[in-house]
Length: 467
Image 1 (cartoon, helix red, strand yellow):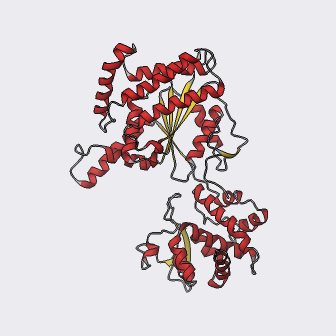
Image 2 (tube, one colour):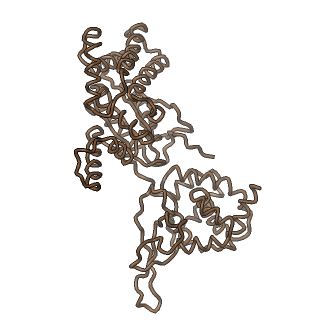
Image 3 (cartoon, one colour):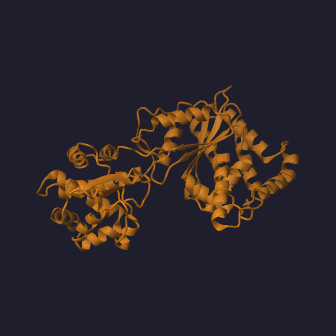
C-alpha cells in the first residue's frame, strides 16, 4: 500500500522545476518570498521537500527512495533551511511567534547535528538563539491584530520600551536581521554569504484569520535581507482568506462589486508579498503514472491495455490529482487478487475493476446505490454516456440529484440531425484538472461497453470478500 507521505522519489517529472527554483532562491536579492501553488493532492509538500533536499540535503519526514536526478545538498555550504507547518499553529493568536520559536528550535537542532559551534563558541551561539525566544516573548505583548496599522503600533511600542535601551538597534526587524546573520556566520563556512530559507507549508489549510495574521507577521517582522521564504499554498484559498479579513468599508456599496473589489485587493496583497508563484503542472499521462504505482507486472500489463482505446490511444479517464491516483492504485492492488481468476476476457474484467474501484473510492453515494441494486450500473452508464443535443441546457438536465453535483469530462452530442443516421461526436468539457466533482471515469464507460452481467461477478468478488 502506498502512503500519502511526502517523497523525494519524483514521479511527476518535476526535478527540472526543483533545480530551477533552487537556483532562483540562491541567486535572488533577499529578502524574497516565493509561492508554490497547487490544489490539495497536487504534490506541493513533496515538491517543497524535494526543493529543501536539493538545497541542503535534508530528508526530514520523507519516505521511500530518492530520485537519482534530484541531487541532494547542492547548496549545503551556503544555506540553512527551516521547515514550518503553518496549520499546526493556526490556533496561535500570533502565528509569527510560533514561527520564531520554530526557527530558534531548528537552528539549535541543525547546529547540534553538524557540531557547528566553532567560530562563535557554544555559549555565544546559544545566547543568540535565546535572544530569538526573548523577541518572541516580547512581541507577544498582545495578539497581532488584523490591522497592519495596529501591528505597526504594537511593534513601535515594544521597540521603544525594549530595544533602544537594551539592544542598541532601532527595530525588532533590525535585531532579528542581526541575529540571523550572526547565526548563519557561525553555521556556514567562513566567508560564505549564506542565506536562511524558510519553507512554510499548508498555509491554505489554516483558518482565514490565522493565514492572514501569519502573512502580516512575515511582512512586518521577517522581511530580512538574508532571508528567503517559500510558501506552499492553494493560491485561490489564500486569496479568499485574505479577502475575508480585509476591511469592506472602502469598497463599492453594490454587493457583487464589493466582493469583486475586495478580491482584487486581496490578490494584489498576495502579489506584493509573493513576487513569484510557481504553479505545479498536473500530470498529463495518468495511465503511466497509475501503472508506476502498481507493483505487480502481470497486473500492470492488463491495466495498461485496459486503459488504452481501440485506436491505440490512452483513455483519459483518471483524475490527474496525484493523491487520488495513488489512492486508486491502493484499492486496485487490494482487489486485483480477488478478481484475477474470474472467467471472461481479462482486459474487460480489469476495466470493470477500474470502474468499480473508482466509484468506490471517490463517489460513495453512487457505490452504495450500485451495491444495493445492480441495475443502478446501467443507470449510471446511461447518465455518463448520454448523447446531448447541441442546445442542451446542462449536463445534469433531467437527472436525479445524486448526479446533479457531478460533471462529465467529455460530452457527446449530435453533430448532424439531418443525416439518416445522426453523427455523434465527443468533445472535451475542458475540466479543471483538480476539480473534485468531475466524474473522470466516464470515458472508460463509453469505451468499455460494460454491462450488468460483466460487473456483477466483479462486484460480488469484491464485496463478498468483506463479509
